[in-house]
Image (cartoon, rainbow, N blue to C red; front, side, top):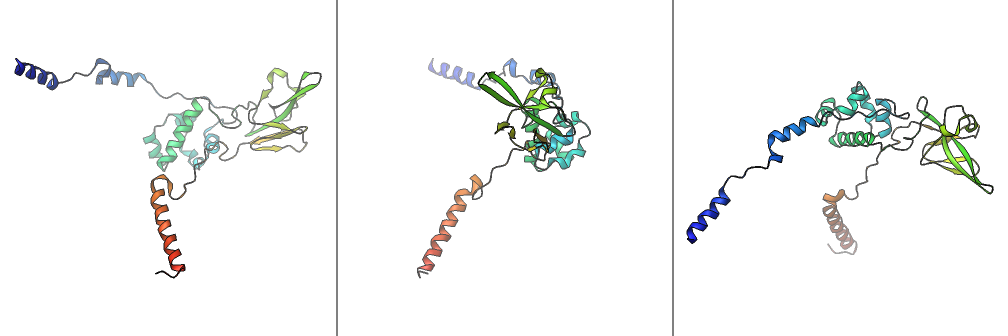
Length: 231
């Protein structure tokens, strides 16, 4: 009886397993087909075309702008296709793909919420709001070029994130330059203004750090012995 039980147990262990229906290759292929092409996000006022997008994300990607004939091509090409276009090294392709996904999700860099942009330049003004008879709040707003805050209806004024009012009417923030009339500031599209800066490797990075520091210690101890007259 015991031998029969052992044989039955071995039979269960050696029996070929059948994959669950949810993991069958046929259904996996169907799911892959239904996923569809990647979504193409619409441009924004600060980033209206391929050249500007590649310029603001930095890392020298603006030199590849001519390789993307349309906005749709920029957001639909796969990593192997980017490689064929000559987008090298691989970390540059990964960086571009990461920024494409951020843009799809609406995660823009500084100035991504601007609504009035002409030829890559946006103007900022100071809006004063009376909270109570003794308190006035100041906000930085984006207005069309050459317009003052008083000329724009209140509901059309766009508050801009990342900028503050200092002193009477000075606007402080990234890439904000004062206008000649001192009535506000302007922002101009600049190379790398959205760039995610790479970290600086110290002593060769994480993989080689221990080895580099060990060899340095050996050399320092050897130099100390030589200075003391021990050879």
